[in-house]
Image (cartoon, rainbow, N blue to C red; front, top):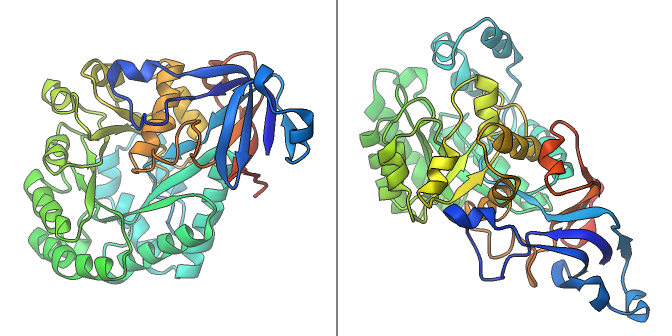
Length: 414
Protein backbone atom coordinates (compact mmCIF):
# COMPACT_ATOMS: atom_id res chain seq x y z
CA UNK A 1 0.00 0.00 0.00
CA UNK A 2 1.24 3.47 -0.89
CA UNK A 3 -0.25 6.52 0.84
CA UNK A 4 0.49 9.77 -1.00
CA UNK A 5 -0.08 13.52 -0.62
CA UNK A 6 -0.17 13.19 3.19
CA UNK A 7 -0.60 16.61 4.78
CA UNK A 8 1.61 15.48 7.64
CA UNK A 9 3.05 12.16 8.76
CA UNK A 10 2.98 12.24 12.57
CA UNK A 11 5.41 10.66 15.03
CA UNK A 12 8.42 10.17 12.75
CA UNK A 13 10.72 9.39 15.66
CA UNK A 14 14.17 7.88 15.10
CA UNK A 15 13.85 4.10 14.95
CA UNK A 16 15.98 3.66 18.07
CA UNK A 17 13.68 5.91 20.17
CA UNK A 18 11.53 3.64 22.32
CA UNK A 19 10.32 5.90 25.15
CA UNK A 20 10.22 9.64 25.88
CA UNK A 21 10.85 11.32 29.25
CA UNK A 22 10.03 14.81 30.49
CA UNK A 23 10.80 17.57 27.98
CA UNK A 24 11.35 14.97 25.26
CA UNK A 25 7.61 14.41 25.18
CA UNK A 26 7.07 17.83 23.61
CA UNK A 27 9.03 16.72 20.55
CA UNK A 28 6.68 15.14 18.00
CA UNK A 29 8.51 14.96 14.65
CA UNK A 30 6.25 15.35 11.62
CA UNK A 31 6.93 15.19 7.91
CA UNK A 32 4.74 17.46 5.79
CA UNK A 33 3.57 16.70 2.24
CA UNK A 34 4.69 13.11 2.58
CA UNK A 35 4.26 9.59 1.23
CA UNK A 36 4.32 6.30 3.14
CA UNK A 37 4.90 2.81 1.72
CA UNK A 38 3.61 -0.28 3.53
CA UNK A 39 4.69 -3.80 2.60
CA UNK A 40 4.24 -7.24 4.19
CA UNK A 41 2.45 -5.67 7.16
CA UNK A 42 5.35 -3.33 7.96
CA UNK A 43 6.40 0.24 7.23
CA UNK A 44 8.69 -0.12 4.23
CA UNK A 45 9.66 3.50 3.54
CA UNK A 46 8.48 7.12 3.60
CA UNK A 47 9.62 10.56 2.60
CA UNK A 48 8.62 13.96 1.18
CA UNK A 49 6.42 13.87 -1.92
CA UNK A 50 9.21 15.01 -4.26
CA UNK A 51 10.90 11.65 -3.53
CA UNK A 52 7.74 9.57 -4.01
CA UNK A 53 8.20 6.37 -6.05
CA UNK A 54 7.36 6.82 -9.73
CA UNK A 55 3.94 6.09 -11.20
CA UNK A 56 5.29 2.86 -12.70
CA UNK A 57 6.30 1.66 -9.25
CA UNK A 58 3.00 2.90 -7.80
CA UNK A 59 1.08 0.46 -9.98
CA UNK A 60 2.46 -2.37 -7.86
CA UNK A 61 0.65 -1.06 -4.80
CA UNK A 62 -2.82 -0.05 -3.70
CA UNK A 63 -2.65 3.74 -3.55
CA UNK A 64 -4.48 6.05 -1.15
CA UNK A 65 -4.54 9.80 -1.70
CA UNK A 66 -4.41 11.44 1.75
CA UNK A 67 -4.40 15.06 0.60
CA UNK A 68 -5.33 17.39 3.47
CA UNK A 69 -5.19 14.49 5.95
CA UNK A 70 -2.84 13.43 8.73
CA UNK A 71 -1.42 9.94 9.22
CA UNK A 72 -0.84 8.89 12.84
CA UNK A 73 0.65 5.77 14.39
CA UNK A 74 -2.21 3.92 16.07
CA UNK A 75 -3.13 4.57 19.69
CA UNK A 76 -1.60 2.09 22.16
CA UNK A 77 -3.94 1.55 25.14
CA UNK A 78 -1.85 0.11 27.96
CA UNK A 79 -4.51 -0.15 30.70
CA UNK A 80 -7.95 -1.68 30.24
CA UNK A 81 -10.44 -4.08 31.84
CA UNK A 82 -12.54 -4.90 28.77
CA UNK A 83 -13.38 -8.47 29.79
CA UNK A 84 -16.46 -8.11 31.98
CA UNK A 85 -19.90 -9.67 32.15
CA UNK A 86 -22.23 -6.69 32.40
CA UNK A 87 -22.43 -2.93 32.53
CA UNK A 88 -23.05 -1.07 35.81
CA UNK A 89 -25.30 1.81 34.83
CA UNK A 90 -27.14 1.50 38.16
CA UNK A 91 -23.97 2.75 39.84
CA UNK A 92 -23.88 5.62 37.37
CA UNK A 93 -27.18 6.76 38.89
CA UNK A 94 -25.75 6.34 42.41
CA UNK A 95 -22.84 8.59 41.41
CA UNK A 96 -25.26 11.25 40.19
CA UNK A 97 -26.95 11.04 43.59
CA UNK A 98 -23.63 11.94 45.17
CA UNK A 99 -22.35 8.57 46.37
CA UNK A 100 -18.57 8.12 46.14
CA UNK A 101 -16.40 5.26 44.87
CA UNK A 102 -15.76 3.80 48.31
CA UNK A 103 -19.40 4.24 49.40
CA UNK A 104 -20.65 2.37 46.33
CA UNK A 105 -18.14 -0.43 46.99
CA UNK A 106 -19.26 -0.67 50.62
CA UNK A 107 -22.87 -1.08 49.43
CA UNK A 108 -21.97 -4.16 47.37
CA UNK A 109 -21.25 -2.31 44.16
CA UNK A 110 -17.94 -1.74 42.47
CA UNK A 111 -15.53 -4.56 41.72
CA UNK A 112 -17.49 -7.14 43.76
CA UNK A 113 -20.58 -6.36 41.68
CA UNK A 114 -18.67 -7.18 38.50
CA UNK A 115 -17.18 -10.30 40.10
CA UNK A 116 -20.63 -11.66 40.99
CA UNK A 117 -21.87 -11.13 37.43
CA UNK A 118 -18.75 -12.60 35.87
CA UNK A 119 -18.97 -15.79 37.93
CA UNK A 120 -22.20 -16.66 36.10
CA UNK A 121 -20.96 -15.83 32.60
CA UNK A 122 -19.46 -18.41 30.25
CA UNK A 123 -16.10 -18.03 28.55
CA UNK A 124 -17.88 -17.74 25.22
CA UNK A 125 -20.13 -14.93 26.47
CA UNK A 126 -17.16 -13.07 27.92
CA UNK A 127 -15.14 -13.52 24.75
CA UNK A 128 -17.87 -12.28 22.41
CA UNK A 129 -18.70 -9.20 24.48
CA UNK A 130 -15.02 -8.29 24.94
CA UNK A 131 -14.27 -8.84 21.25
CA UNK A 132 -17.04 -6.40 20.28
CA UNK A 133 -15.65 -3.79 22.67
CA UNK A 134 -12.13 -4.13 21.27
CA UNK A 135 -13.41 -3.93 17.68
CA UNK A 136 -15.07 -0.63 18.59
CA UNK A 137 -11.76 0.57 20.02
CA UNK A 138 -9.91 -0.48 16.87
CA UNK A 139 -12.36 1.57 14.79
CA UNK A 140 -11.48 4.57 16.97
CA UNK A 141 -7.77 4.21 16.21
CA UNK A 142 -6.46 1.82 18.87
CA UNK A 143 -4.21 -0.99 17.62
CA UNK A 144 -2.53 -2.40 20.74
CA UNK A 145 -4.17 -3.09 24.09
CA UNK A 146 -3.42 -4.45 27.54
CA UNK A 147 -6.29 -6.30 29.24
CA UNK A 148 -6.47 -7.17 32.95
CA UNK A 149 -8.28 -9.86 34.85
CA UNK A 150 -9.51 -8.90 38.32
CA UNK A 151 -13.27 -9.39 38.08
CA UNK A 152 -12.91 -13.08 38.92
CA UNK A 153 -11.53 -13.07 42.47
CA UNK A 154 -11.73 -16.87 42.63
CA UNK A 155 -9.37 -19.46 41.21
CA UNK A 156 -11.89 -20.56 38.58
CA UNK A 157 -13.08 -17.11 37.51
CA UNK A 158 -9.64 -15.49 37.34
CA UNK A 159 -8.38 -18.27 35.08
CA UNK A 160 -11.58 -18.03 33.04
CA UNK A 161 -10.89 -14.34 32.42
CA UNK A 162 -7.27 -14.96 31.49
CA UNK A 163 -8.25 -17.74 29.07
CA UNK A 164 -10.64 -15.29 27.41
CA UNK A 165 -7.82 -12.74 27.11
CA UNK A 166 -5.55 -15.44 25.63
CA UNK A 167 -8.21 -16.19 23.02
CA UNK A 168 -8.49 -12.48 22.23
CA UNK A 169 -4.71 -12.46 21.76
CA UNK A 170 -4.98 -15.29 19.27
CA UNK A 171 -7.99 -14.03 17.32
CA UNK A 172 -7.73 -10.23 17.22
CA UNK A 173 -5.61 -8.55 14.52
CA UNK A 174 -3.76 -6.36 17.05
CA UNK A 175 -1.20 -7.04 19.82
CA UNK A 176 -2.85 -7.90 23.16
CA UNK A 177 -1.06 -8.05 26.50
CA UNK A 178 -2.55 -9.94 29.46
CA UNK A 179 -2.28 -8.87 33.10
CA UNK A 180 -3.16 -11.02 36.11
CA UNK A 181 -5.03 -8.82 38.60
CA UNK A 182 -6.54 -11.19 41.16
CA UNK A 183 -5.34 -8.64 43.75
CA UNK A 184 -8.01 -6.17 42.65
CA UNK A 185 -9.97 -6.32 45.90
CA UNK A 186 -10.72 -8.85 48.63
CA UNK A 187 -13.66 -11.21 47.98
CA UNK A 188 -16.37 -11.18 50.64
CA UNK A 189 -15.33 -14.61 51.92
CA UNK A 190 -11.84 -13.24 52.65
CA UNK A 191 -12.98 -9.87 53.97
CA UNK A 192 -11.52 -10.64 57.39
CA UNK A 193 -8.78 -12.98 56.19
CA UNK A 194 -6.54 -10.99 53.89
CA UNK A 195 -3.61 -13.36 54.23
CA UNK A 196 -5.85 -16.27 53.27
CA UNK A 197 -6.65 -14.63 49.93
CA UNK A 198 -3.04 -13.63 49.34
CA UNK A 199 -2.03 -17.25 49.99
CA UNK A 200 -4.62 -18.38 47.42
CA UNK A 201 -3.13 -15.98 44.85
CA UNK A 202 0.46 -16.99 45.59
CA UNK A 203 0.13 -20.73 46.15
CA UNK A 204 -2.66 -21.69 43.75
CA UNK A 205 -3.44 -19.01 41.18
CA UNK A 206 0.08 -17.95 40.23
CA UNK A 207 1.35 -21.49 39.51
CA UNK A 208 -1.74 -22.23 37.37
CA UNK A 209 -1.40 -18.94 35.47
CA UNK A 210 2.27 -19.67 34.81
CA UNK A 211 1.63 -23.27 33.74
CA UNK A 212 -0.91 -22.19 31.11
CA UNK A 213 1.15 -19.11 30.16
CA UNK A 214 -1.89 -16.90 30.63
CA UNK A 215 -0.31 -13.59 31.68
CA UNK A 216 2.45 -11.20 30.69
CA UNK A 217 2.20 -9.05 33.83
CA UNK A 218 1.05 -9.01 37.46
CA UNK A 219 -0.99 -6.13 38.90
CA UNK A 220 -2.10 -5.19 42.42
CA UNK A 221 -4.53 -2.47 43.49
CA UNK A 222 -2.28 -0.87 46.10
CA UNK A 223 -4.67 1.52 47.78
CA UNK A 224 -6.32 2.46 51.06
CA UNK A 225 -9.03 -0.13 51.75
CA UNK A 226 -7.61 -2.57 49.20
CA UNK A 227 -4.04 -3.97 49.27
CA UNK A 228 -1.43 -2.39 51.53
CA UNK A 229 2.16 -1.72 50.53
CA UNK A 230 3.28 -4.74 52.56
CA UNK A 231 0.67 -6.99 50.94
CA UNK A 232 1.58 -5.67 47.50
CA UNK A 233 5.26 -6.35 48.19
CA UNK A 234 4.45 -9.92 49.16
CA UNK A 235 2.46 -10.59 45.97
CA UNK A 236 5.01 -8.97 43.64
CA UNK A 237 7.86 -10.91 45.24
CA UNK A 238 6.00 -14.16 44.62
CA UNK A 239 5.10 -13.18 41.03
CA UNK A 240 8.73 -12.44 40.21
CA UNK A 241 9.49 -16.15 40.65
CA UNK A 242 7.19 -16.75 37.67
CA UNK A 243 8.78 -13.94 35.62
CA UNK A 244 5.68 -11.76 35.80
CA UNK A 245 6.64 -8.09 35.72
CA UNK A 246 4.49 -5.61 37.68
CA UNK A 247 2.05 -3.02 36.36
CA UNK A 248 0.60 -1.42 39.49
CA UNK A 249 -2.69 0.35 40.27
CA UNK A 250 -1.26 3.12 42.45
CA UNK A 251 -2.37 6.37 44.12
CA UNK A 252 -5.89 6.50 42.70
CA UNK A 253 -7.57 7.54 45.95
CA UNK A 254 -4.64 8.44 48.20
CA UNK A 255 -0.85 8.74 48.32
CA UNK A 256 -0.68 5.02 49.03
CA UNK A 257 2.98 4.11 48.56
CA UNK A 258 1.97 2.12 45.48
CA UNK A 259 4.27 4.09 43.19
CA UNK A 260 7.33 3.52 45.34
CA UNK A 261 6.69 -0.21 45.77
CA UNK A 262 6.17 -0.47 42.02
CA UNK A 263 9.47 1.27 41.34
CA UNK A 264 11.20 -0.96 43.90
CA UNK A 265 10.04 -4.03 41.97
CA UNK A 266 10.98 -2.60 38.57
CA UNK A 267 7.38 -2.14 37.42
CA UNK A 268 6.86 -1.58 33.72
CA UNK A 269 4.31 1.05 34.72
CA UNK A 270 2.51 2.53 37.70
CA UNK A 271 -1.02 3.50 36.73
CA UNK A 272 -3.57 6.12 37.85
CA UNK A 273 -1.51 8.55 40.01
CA UNK A 274 -4.41 10.91 40.62
CA UNK A 275 -2.85 11.59 44.04
CA UNK A 276 0.84 12.47 44.17
CA UNK A 277 3.33 14.34 46.36
CA UNK A 278 6.96 15.37 45.94
CA UNK A 279 8.22 11.94 46.98
CA UNK A 280 6.12 10.28 44.27
CA UNK A 281 7.33 12.72 41.61
CA UNK A 282 10.96 12.25 42.63
CA UNK A 283 10.64 8.45 42.69
CA UNK A 284 9.75 8.51 38.98
CA UNK A 285 12.39 11.05 37.96
CA UNK A 286 14.62 9.62 35.20
CA UNK A 287 13.13 6.21 35.97
CA UNK A 288 12.32 3.48 33.43
CA UNK A 289 8.97 2.85 35.17
CA UNK A 290 6.29 4.66 33.16
CA UNK A 291 3.55 6.74 34.77
CA UNK A 292 0.33 5.71 33.01
CA UNK A 293 -2.36 8.35 33.48
CA UNK A 294 -6.08 7.67 33.07
CA UNK A 295 -7.86 11.02 32.73
CA UNK A 296 -11.21 9.59 31.65
CA UNK A 297 -11.38 7.81 35.03
CA UNK A 298 -10.93 11.16 36.79
CA UNK A 299 -13.55 12.67 34.49
CA UNK A 300 -16.10 9.93 35.19
CA UNK A 301 -15.53 9.64 38.95
CA UNK A 302 -15.06 13.37 39.48
CA UNK A 303 -11.78 12.81 41.31
CA UNK A 304 -8.55 14.82 40.88
CA UNK A 305 -6.65 14.66 37.61
CA UNK A 306 -3.05 13.47 37.67
CA UNK A 307 -0.20 15.96 37.91
CA UNK A 308 1.18 15.47 34.41
CA UNK A 309 3.20 18.68 34.41
CA UNK A 310 4.86 17.82 37.70
CA UNK A 311 5.78 14.39 36.40
CA UNK A 312 7.25 15.81 33.21
CA UNK A 313 9.15 18.49 35.13
CA UNK A 314 10.77 15.61 37.02
CA UNK A 315 11.70 13.95 33.71
CA UNK A 316 9.27 11.05 34.12
CA UNK A 317 7.84 9.13 31.17
CA UNK A 318 4.05 9.44 30.81
CA UNK A 319 1.66 7.16 28.95
CA UNK A 320 -2.08 7.68 28.49
CA UNK A 321 -4.66 4.89 28.55
CA UNK A 322 -8.43 4.48 28.80
CA UNK A 323 -8.93 2.28 31.90
CA UNK A 324 -11.98 0.96 30.02
CA UNK A 325 -14.12 -0.87 32.60
CA UNK A 326 -17.79 -1.06 33.62
CA UNK A 327 -17.50 0.84 36.89
CA UNK A 328 -15.18 3.83 36.68
CA UNK A 329 -14.52 4.35 32.96
CA UNK A 330 -17.10 2.85 30.61
CA UNK A 331 -15.35 4.10 27.47
CA UNK A 332 -12.50 2.84 25.31
CA UNK A 333 -12.14 6.01 23.23
CA UNK A 334 -8.48 7.03 23.17
CA UNK A 335 -9.32 10.16 21.17
CA UNK A 336 -11.29 11.45 24.15
CA UNK A 337 -8.43 10.49 26.48
CA UNK A 338 -6.01 12.58 24.39
CA UNK A 339 -8.45 15.52 24.47
CA UNK A 340 -8.83 15.24 28.25
CA UNK A 341 -5.06 15.11 28.64
CA UNK A 342 -4.87 18.47 26.90
CA UNK A 343 -7.89 20.04 28.58
CA UNK A 344 -7.51 18.74 32.14
CA UNK A 345 -3.88 17.62 32.49
CA UNK A 346 -2.62 20.68 30.57
CA UNK A 347 -0.53 18.54 28.27
CA UNK A 348 0.32 20.04 24.91
CA UNK A 349 -1.11 18.14 21.92
CA UNK A 350 2.36 16.85 21.03
CA UNK A 351 2.90 15.55 24.58
CA UNK A 352 -0.50 13.87 24.71
CA UNK A 353 -0.06 12.22 21.32
CA UNK A 354 3.38 10.89 22.27
CA UNK A 355 1.92 9.58 25.54
CA UNK A 356 -0.87 7.77 23.68
CA UNK A 357 1.37 6.29 20.98
CA UNK A 358 5.08 5.68 21.60
CA UNK A 359 4.96 5.76 25.41
CA UNK A 360 1.74 3.74 25.44
CA UNK A 361 3.55 1.11 23.39
CA UNK A 362 6.50 1.29 25.81
CA UNK A 363 4.12 0.66 28.73
CA UNK A 364 3.34 -2.70 27.06
CA UNK A 365 6.98 -3.32 26.00
CA UNK A 366 5.87 -2.98 22.38
CA UNK A 367 7.65 0.20 21.33
CA UNK A 368 10.21 -1.67 19.21
CA UNK A 369 7.34 -2.57 16.88
CA UNK A 370 4.62 0.01 17.58
CA UNK A 371 3.97 3.62 18.51
CA UNK A 372 5.79 5.65 15.85
CA UNK A 373 6.37 5.90 12.12
CA UNK A 374 9.68 4.13 11.52
CA UNK A 375 10.93 1.74 8.87
CA UNK A 376 10.42 -1.86 9.97
CA UNK A 377 7.70 -1.13 12.51
CA UNK A 378 4.28 -2.73 12.26
CA UNK A 379 2.03 -0.88 9.79
CA UNK A 380 -0.72 -0.05 12.30
CA UNK A 381 -1.91 3.51 11.78
CA UNK A 382 -4.89 5.69 11.03
CA UNK A 383 -5.65 8.41 8.51
CA UNK A 384 -7.70 11.36 9.69
CA UNK A 385 -10.42 13.25 7.92
CA UNK A 386 -9.33 16.49 6.29
CA UNK A 387 -8.31 18.61 9.29
CA UNK A 388 -6.62 22.02 9.47
CA UNK A 389 -3.88 21.27 12.01
CA UNK A 390 -2.46 18.66 14.37
CA UNK A 391 -4.10 20.28 17.41
CA UNK A 392 -7.51 19.97 15.76
CA UNK A 393 -7.67 16.29 16.73
CA UNK A 394 -7.70 16.86 20.53
CA UNK A 395 -9.48 20.21 20.08
CA UNK A 396 -12.53 18.57 18.48
CA UNK A 397 -13.29 16.36 21.48
CA UNK A 398 -16.27 14.05 21.16
CA UNK A 399 -16.07 14.02 17.38
CA UNK A 400 -14.16 11.29 15.59
CA UNK A 401 -11.55 12.61 13.18
CA UNK A 402 -10.45 9.06 12.34
CA UNK A 403 -11.40 8.16 8.77
CA UNK A 404 -9.35 5.11 7.76
CA UNK A 405 -7.87 2.37 9.94
CA UNK A 406 -4.88 0.40 8.66
CA UNK A 407 -3.79 -2.73 10.51
CA UNK A 408 -0.81 -4.80 9.46
CA UNK A 409 -0.62 -2.82 6.21
CA UNK A 410 -4.24 -3.35 5.17
CA UNK A 411 -7.43 -1.30 5.47
CA UNK A 412 -9.52 -2.57 8.38
CA UNK A 413 -13.30 -2.54 8.08
CA UNK A 414 -14.22 -4.49 11.24
